[in-house]
Image (cartoon, rainbow, N blue to C red; front, side):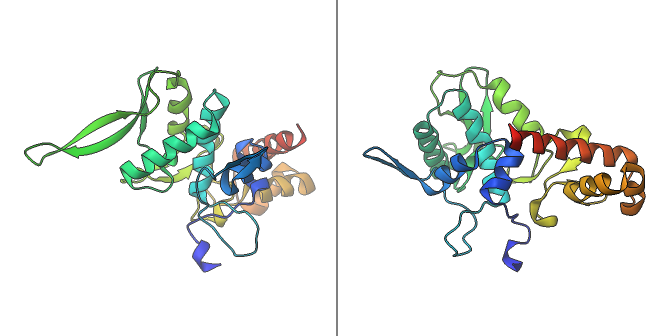
Amino acid sequence: MDELIGVGLYTPAEAGRLLNIAPGKIIRWLRGHRAGEQDYEPLWKSQIDLDDGRTYLGFRDLMEARVAEKFISHGVSPQRVRAAIRLAREIIGDERPLSTDRFRTDGRDIFLRVAEKDEQGEEREQLLNLFRRQYEFKHIIDPLLKTVDFDERGSPLLWWPAGRRANIIVDPARSFGQPIDALTSVPTAALAAAARSEGIEKAAKTYDVSLASMRRAVDFEAELARRLAA
């Protein structure tokens, strides 16, 4: 499992729980599917192949699925998303371009930030329009970018799934990418389980976390459970 350190590991069910996406949909995106007489290719290839015939996601896959779902839920067909991924992949050289910070919008068009050299050999940043004035994306993309920390190359480092104030992060370098308390790195699932069995105050002392962190973890896990039951 050493090769998974810093990558994250999620089953479609775990990813679906975090993203509020049906696991079957995630599997279709990563494996492709057949509908009627039509075969549909995967939207992208998963980071992880454990050679056991099952589908898994890495952290970058999680972030890619998060953005893909937003596009699709706002009327962009999976085929169009697949084409955009393919085009963006060729332009910026990243296998999972939707998960980067390269996407921008002016409220109507959606653009990909690209760097090109002018006639003097100087590098200038330009915007490439991918969707041709057909969708309103400003209110879709901006909130997604605000809850992710990116590295200097624009690749996602970690995610704040309940917003930054909740102090809960998903970091592929810790706990195989499971949600954790940002201050202590204790998985939220462990905190919530301890709160159920011991009570919030005793569990907080056991794990040496604040009562506020404990309550946020309990609320976060309760919301994930609600999604599964919905």
